[in-house]
Image 1: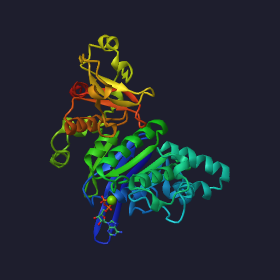
Image 2: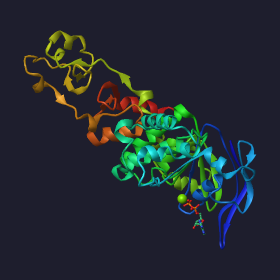
Image 3: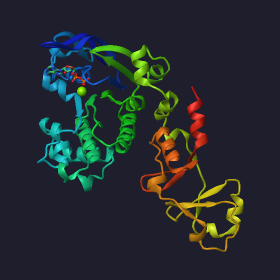
Image 4: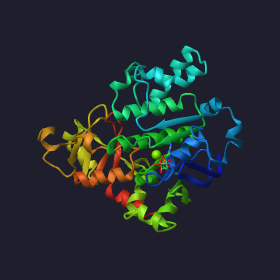
Length: 364
Ligand SMILES: Nc1ncnc2c1ncn2[C@@H]1O[C@H](COP(=O)(O)OP(=O)(O)O)[C@@H](O)[C@H]1O
Ligand SMILES: [Mg+2]
């Protein structure tokens, strides 16, 4: 738990944070959101003592941070920023192991941890450990930033617009991946953003700030359904039902399917037995998705290539950790009512339809 009591930070002619009192709960993602200059970064950096408050106090796990040694305080707090600030002349492995090295971990323990973390953030350890930061894409560099922050297993993570410099598509992927990691690790996360969609998707609780003060501190549902004032209402804007969809993952709403194999598709009996559905997914012998066929299709003397519509799964497929909002925008963009749900490798897991999404969005 992190507690702020009447915290104020003043600069010469400006109050960046104004008498802020706030409790941040253990194991939750608390998102701080608000317009540029409202004091988000200042608030975050006071928690790990990169900035000292002008007045007020901050407690981490019951202890006033003024009474804690700065180094040991920071060891318990991972910090992720935009453009990550990886050390350019160090390999990915050395970057990730920065804190464990300072803490005197053995070489074997460090390497083990690096491999574990690369795996956790979705990068193949053997392919990435010896790369240099310049060889990484923006999204990959952010993943390394997260891995580095998690290296010594701190209970708290401070994240300042961590995905802000990544393009929108990759940002949604990173959000989904981080939520998956958080489900496992249950860190106390303070996450700063100015992107409302990101806040709605990531947060257990949202703190809306304005001019250094709290405007509303509530669950995403409450912020969307009962904005505290016109400032929050304007901030939240329209399409609130659509925004809620970003809080649900494909995993909770998709259906398992029985696909047919390319060989079986030429067997009339197989098709007959599956006549209930309008169409069938086709997989190869490794369960990799290939395409779909109209189930009623009866001219089975034709070759598979003539009856099957090939599915470019990178364009059409959704993953179980994608949000329903992403699935919906894919449907709208591609003009289809049903999408295959696939693993990263292309293995077919099931399908998700417009109906499944409508059902979910209607639920309060
Ligand atoms: N070192 C500083 N000196 C003077 N003013 C600062 C300093 N750091 C931040 N500020 C001011 O404090 C306010 C809050 O800044 P910040 O916390 O960075 O906002 P946010 O992260 O919400 O965009 C801004 O008006 C900013 O100009
Ligand atoms: Mg900032």
